Image 1: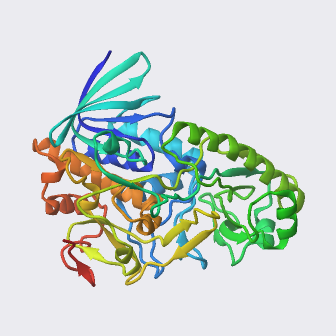
Image 2: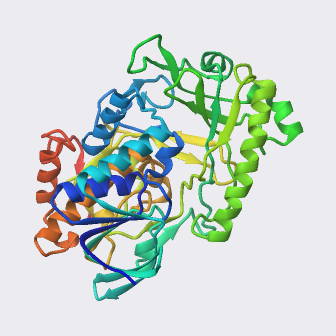
Length: 457
């Protein structure tokens, strides 16, 4: 059994954990990142857009490590920047999933983060208000990991739950959660023809980094014109099925429309069942697209290697982000960043997407307290398991907010480790100053410049 020690342990190597690891290491901490899969990047490796950097009024509010990743991807040909769109959001940030994985793997190594792949936390030792050690199952057996501070970037709040932190799961008494989906990759397709055939509004158009003609990189629509075939062939359970497309290539496209309902992503058997059902569902959808939707007829398909889980646990933090915080675009004195993508809920009963726009200036603040568990001082929880209502979670769960929270969590854990204290006892003003110094936000992002600031009690 190996024994690892570090300043900051990050559990989960999705986009949240990537940002947390980079931020912690760059802040001078010895950082270890634990990732169950053989790769980092999480859902971004499936090719999903990094929603969202720009408000519906055209103001960019996400910077820092999130923007740095996009810039580096543009340089290697794996992104096209923030592209205006006249749909349910004002701009989109498409990326190539494989390039994303390559780039963040390189960035973590360059920063000095020790990533341990194929490793899962299976237990922990709690001493009062702190986590004393973690038990990690990996090659060679069970290992011990001791860290001054821990970042739970698992997506499911696994570490918080193991430590006894209370949480909410799903909506209402029934606890129904948003469906699990799997991205379908199509190659050798005509994206212009597809956009003309199925897009509801004009597609977002961009020029690749090396130049050339503009290509469609994002559009959404529905299968309404094929309703009779869809129902007859049992492709989807409902009519007018929504579908979302994105790409950074002229002849490839990612298709987001599959879903399985009422499966719990924290249950290993149910998550495995979702993987099986979604892989088969993607094949059937792919066959349908080739047979009936112009632009797909010469294409070939590859389902994503992993399912995408939208919702499981949300911890009870020292503040819970409320519905009205999002709907009114509220600002908080302990803000660590902003969210500008609309509330995006794929209905638990149908999987149809419903969008609710953010009010005010088009962005709301993430209060630091929402990342701090109620009774555990050396744990920061970041990503989609942050403390939020079911409705608010529809906005906080997306990848740009997760990158924002990850950077803040890694920075907070590193600063407090250096001071031999805990994230819960860190003065948030020190954290905010560091985030501004690191370029995570513009210099006037904190300290009263926002309209309609609010202090939660």
